[in-house]
Image (cartoon, rainbow over all chains, first blue to last red; front, side, top):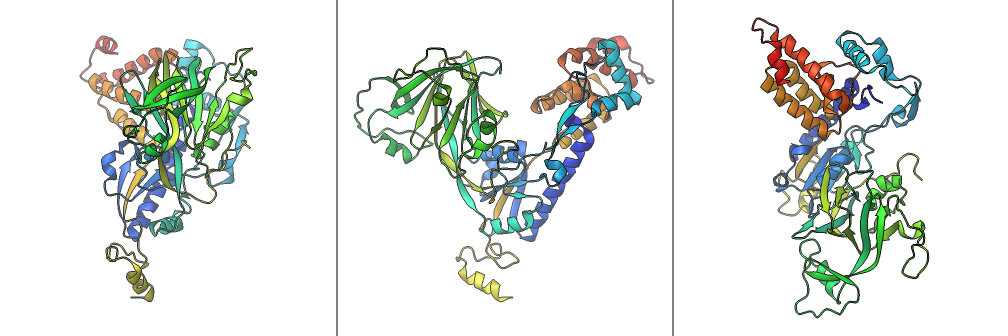
Length: 387
Length: 133
């Protein structure tokens, strides 16, 4: 692809999409003014917690990315979130995946003139003709947001917004992923993830090594106590005498946990998703699409390298189907010990990350405060080609 | 006032039964204070920098500042800064990319731009610009 234009930089297309987005925003403002609602606007990149004071509804106008990044600020789950897809795929042409008969970039290169052509000639004189392997290129027209997390679109927001403003919308609590990382001197609570987490080596070519297990509190009654304030501090019950444990014990929030059924994993990392996120990267990676109302989490080990002769606790041969893909159910806690020199946790995409070091311990469960979200009837449809 | 307004007024709680709580349709609003989080499209981001680039008086510090922005922006967008620089100056250019080209052509572009900008009456020597680039 050397020497060819990145498609996303095609100015006319960007301009067209900008105009569609702008039109949606202007339409939305007009609707809100008509309903005499107090509102303020903030750019997605400038959103801060101080903007959330006295707000009783957050409206994310854009696509799924805007919804996800807005959701990261709603970590207590008290403010409901409404997503509006500002530039949906409305025409049949938008929804198609087509195979182009000619390469536009080659066409531009051959027919363009002026200074642009001068630079092209300069390139060719430096490096020779680009290595076109084929005159054909696939064009994925659907570059717009899927909008799975958006209840409304620019085409139906008039009625939908009116209903939401009057409390008639379908408000659902969506499970989110709680993730804590314990390093040598600190314990970090990551922002709750609405879609998924990817735990992997920062280099996609490098092996991610970790030990995966399940945590059970040492002693009884601790789980109940944690439920009282699951996201702030895991407070141990006063004067509780913990049972003796036989395996490895670790502590999160001062509470001791025994780690069971642990397994050493060499892989390309691991996906963990909610039911909402199970239709996205998880499905593309080979995971299952979950019932949208499920509160379970799903994990999927990517490119798991199982050594020949490896056996499970029962002495049976370890099989991919047994260990690679599974659920983190209510009350279960997954434990990872990161055994690579470097690692990274990607939260709901590539923008928000947390770095891992050798020896970091990670707790993953579904106890993050759920997000209150307005959902449409046909929510979270699977992507094209995924059954 | 129509009847629906009265019905709604009576059913609303005392705190909510204010003018602000009732909209033109006469129904009580559940959500009264909204925060709109609006996506900034790539076009807007590019346009801002493009504008600066095209109206820049081509002093080296200003160019540096703009390229720093370009770099930050392209990192955010996961695209090569170099492509973007070329794109800014030449809207329909077949874009060249990859790091291997960056050092060659970015220099060349800067030199051309500098030459255009500085070949006026002031006439800064090209050697100085080359050093700066």
